[in-house]
Image (cartoon, rainbow, N blue to C red):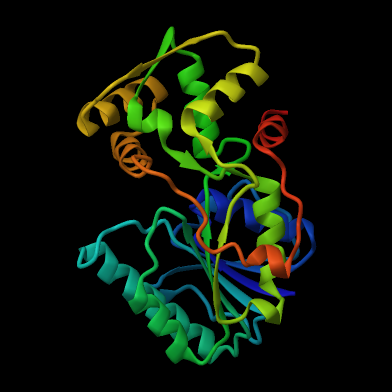
Length: 287
């Protein structure tokens, strides 16, 4: 399979690139800085294009006759935000290049917390290239954001959270399961021109996940749930307690102030894959 992938600065994008290389697919990565791939050497099936989709400057031509082109986005800005305009321009230029090299399938991957942008869907529809939009829930994998936060929290004397954080629910999915779904979607025509949400088999609160994580790691800690903590202080505490940069801590804190559940589960009808439960996903991540 001949694959183009952009967005390997995201956790899932980087892991998918390594997954495809292990499967001996022909992979081309579009990156702004080649140093992001400095740890991936000696791969005869890997090609790199250094470029900028906004300015449309590339170090070399894109490969011809692509089977699939992946675009990973971490875009979460609100309607009318300047970052939304940049994302639309980036996607537009990506589609333009895909059409010129005869790409057979476009796959747009985004976080579940991001609303589906109708302008982006319109761009895909006008491209006349089969497309698939994927929204992914919290990834449970080695060094994933969720695992990093839980590890940092577990190292504190006491764990403090507000009631919204404690009660908000999501569907965490194991990294291996997310990669399996994306591999299935990459070359399967039955997924064309559709949108899917990908999550794990369980609906858990962040408190429930943290308690299971502590149990698996055999760590005894006290979790103190406060009735209300302003989002500013919640972000500040999360940054200090987890070591996350303030902007990432703020984004994470803001986007877990409510349930993040898969609304479109039709992928299970097309591909009845049995995903790992949260405990097994954590064990897989920390081994």
